[in-house]
Amino acid sequence: MKNLKINEGQANEINIAYQDSGEGKPLILIHGWPSTSQMFESQLVELPKQGVRCIAYDRRGFGKSDQPFNGYDYNTLANDLNQLIKKLDLTDVTLLGFSMGGGEVVRYLSKYNVEGRVTKAILVSSIIPYIKKTDSNPHGVPIEMIDGFAEKIKADRPAFMANFNKAFFGDTVIGSPVSEAFLNWNFDLCMQASPVATLEAMYSWAETDFREEVKHISIPTLIIHGDADKTVPIEVAGKQASELIPNNKFLIYDDEPHGLAYTAKDQLNADIISFMRQ
Image (cartoon, one colour):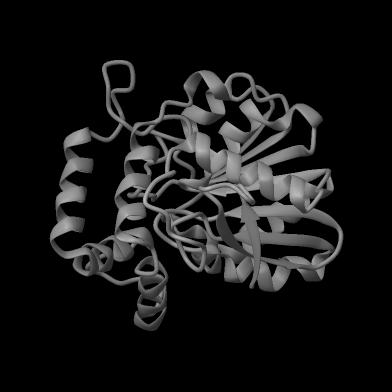
């Protein structure tokens, strides 16, 4: 992987690890919590063969990027993305945000896309528009549940991640769509995150309300969500996003869990390519 300096020459300078492969229109893939860019292995292997330039980076605090003590709010994370786009001088970009990564996509579009460098957006199993349960968001996740996650992470992060990992891929008592070896590999990706980033980023995706921001997204947006997603239920996210984002196409993947970037990799790859070629 390559490294790119964010806030170069400043006291808060950090290195962001990224991979860049293929030629053609650029697709930036933004990973979910608490994984790394390696979660897109099935896309990074296939999409460059189809004329897509794939750029996938590890969010600060995760994977092989630097792990500062702070900066896990969406304003900072979107600024990191903005600097990456500018330093690589990318244009006609499609942004793909998976789960937590949807927040960077929306915040970037609302704050930084004045030059029009990004022309399309894809939200996959995304937390957009708002996860936390409130009077105006009755189908959301109670903050008490998020607080419970935090306590479990502090008490035994590996145990929490092992259980989270299973739900992520739709593991049930009657079976799992992925192998034990795959679960172990994904667990290792999650454990690369710093403990601080794991907790701080969790509250960012749980508590940030994007409902007003998404109403102003003007570029074509593809929304993809599995109707068996137990991690970020489709009623909370995908369906609401499709009702708020003006120019969108909403694809529901039947019986697919949160981790559909792997469990439905062939369909997802085909839909990404089709959308980018439109």
